[in-house]
Image 1 (cartoon, rainbow, N blue to C red):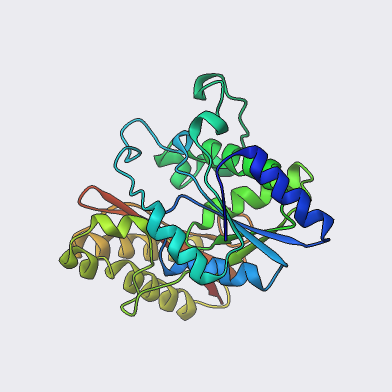
Image 2 (cartoon, rainbow, N blue to C red; image 1 turned 90 degrees about the vertical axis):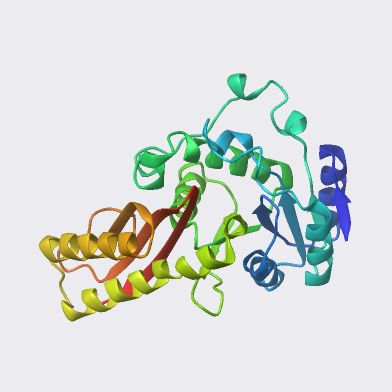
Length: 287
């Protein structure tokens, strides 16, 4: 497995693969890899001849009071896991390489409307940072396929829209959320939780399951009133489990818009704080 730490090395490798007529699948990450990330690598291997993973903690997507400085950086362990998973190359750029003029003067990408709801409303500028870094990485790596986890459901939709709007020649793949045996979605931020808090945090999945069951009770058509009632009940369940909810929202899978009359493909989205740790999760529902 190659470790590519410069843009020149990346481009030389990409040229060599192109000369071999090898297709390329790309998995962007911020490191601190867990089984969910490795599942993305496994899926990428089914899509293309070569798989490249990036590890970069992107400062542009962190807010002023967020955990940029404390975000776990575990490069040696990550490299070992990726080699065992069968990745062909790992790209590890520096911030000086990614943003040579600094963040204040960096050209940015912004996907309107969808970037301002849900997590975008709670974390202003977050999806601008996500779209910008993914766009830059796509330009650097020039993949045929890119693989993202569905746990970051809104992020996946932002990226899909960006690629469509800018006519980018990359096929975007979403992979189902990897969960622990107790239902907790795997996340790098789970490392901030104590063992007791991790057990408490399973309430997110149970709450979403109860919401899904409630939606099915009202199928095939769920009214706006029913949705608001279910959302309120979920908020209460999370508070009783020790969370401070940010939002619970039932939306359309198609575009994260409000649920239209007769719509059957829905998604339950949750963001909540366990202490200072903000966790997100979602559950797709077909009525």
